[in-house]
Length: 118
Image (cartoon, rainbow, N blue to C red; front, side):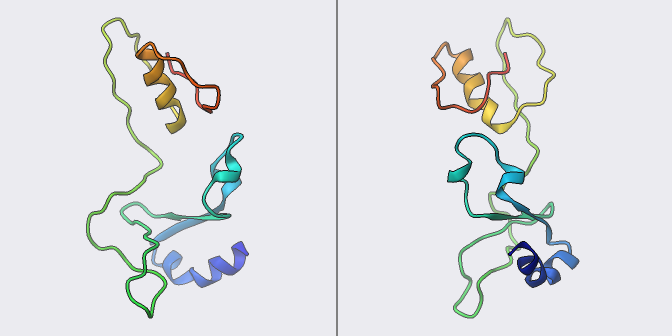
């Protein structure tokens, strides 16, 4: 299925709109992986977004050429706490919520995959 999808997407890959196609297991982990969206994930190149809404009845996709909310693999986490030590580790997105809960003195639910950074 992945090879068939990549063949269909060849023009977008060659034009560097799509950078890769990955299986869900290559991106996500943890006990909730079965709830991840789809079986294969398209990874857009920097500066591009994928939108699943149809542009019109003749196409199953549309190119977005205007700024729109998007996701990137890298981000920045900034927080301030007077007695906080310098945090130099790389966080994962799922570590942010338990970190904020711990900093706020709130319990971290058992179902949370991430770990607090502090």
